[in-house]
Image 1: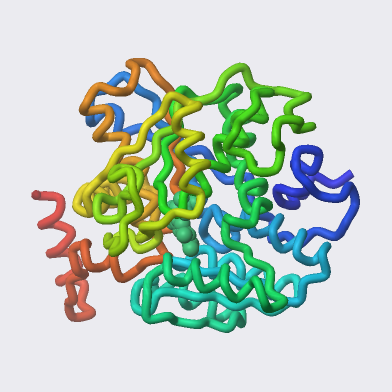
Image 2: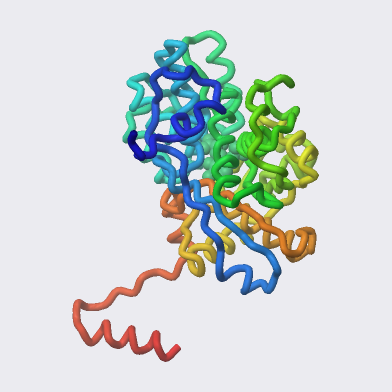
Amino acid sequence: MTSRYQGIIHRYRQRLPVAPDGPVVTLGEGDTPLIELIHLPRRIGRDVRIFCKFEGLNPTGSFKDRGMTLAVTKALEAEARAIICASTGNTSAAAAAYAARAGIACFVLIPEGKIALGKLSQAMMHGAAVIQIRGNFDDGMRLVQEVAQDLPVTIVNSVNPYRLQGQKTASFEIIEALGGAPDYHALPVGNAGNITAHWIGYSEAAGKMTKACALCAGDCAYLAAPFADSRPVMLGYQAAGAAPFLRGAFVDHPDTVATAIRIGHPVSWEQAWTASKESGGWFAEVTDAEILEAQKLLAGTEGIFCEPASAASVAGLLKDLERNTIRPGATVVCTLTGHGLKDPDTAIAQSTPPVTVDAERKAIERIIRSHSES
Ligand code: F0G
């Protein structure tokens, strides 16, 4: 009996659509920390407990790994030789890594000039065929669906239902860590797969049907052994320049500093609406300035470095707390979807630049003294 953690499929096999003993493509994803914010609630003077599920600590630095282990395991099961995705960066990084591990080919379509540097370097290092398109994510998504109809490539975007099945495991971990579901769960929303996946996970854990699940169609075996009494209210936060859920319609030219969620035509549109409505939740929007402020706040006061899109969950929550739409005394989980190192350019651009001095003791002392005086 080994206690070595071996990823979400190994951990939750009974609750996932996988063969009981088939081969698994894993990098040990999941089991990410749930970090309680200690400074922020005090600073804003609200009676609330805020936990951050730091998904940036997955093997490729984002929550996508949870979905990718399942999607690639199932692709191998079906004897696929190649996978394909459109991506704002993180999906391409995860797809490239898991394809490398599985020994199959990987094609990624990314919007030219609009993906963060860390993500691009990952897809390249893992040996994916990186195709930059003169268009945005939504164009890439359409193209991927078109070519997959005629060519032998398996789509690993979240239209692939196994992606959501893998991603639902984050809810299981949260319930286990808190001893029950939180009152609210806040997520950044782009293509809208993750909010859907979390709602599926919470619903299954509570033994409750959800119409958001494409696989279960009402007679789901996973509802049989509930381990939570309740489900959270789902809060979906979008960047104001890419907020189709706020507009009530697709957006053709999305734009935001949070390039990960620069999406105007989310593929899980219906499912995310269902998740939001069934949970009694809502969508709200945050500006780029609010996103970056929340990112800095998390990094500077809590020691947690997430990427801009991830900070939308905290930015949105802060706004809702201000509006008094969150019940006093509530427990809230914010998903921090990706690591800050993914996007060093945005981080550096908004930080105080380093000072440069001669390599002399006096120069260093002067700086330390002026700091302690200020
Ligand atoms: N946060 C990050 C860091 C992301 O990379 C994404 C999506 C989201 C949030 C939104 O999640 O799409 O499930 O609503 N990134 C995709 C990609 C689109 O290609 O990496 P969602």
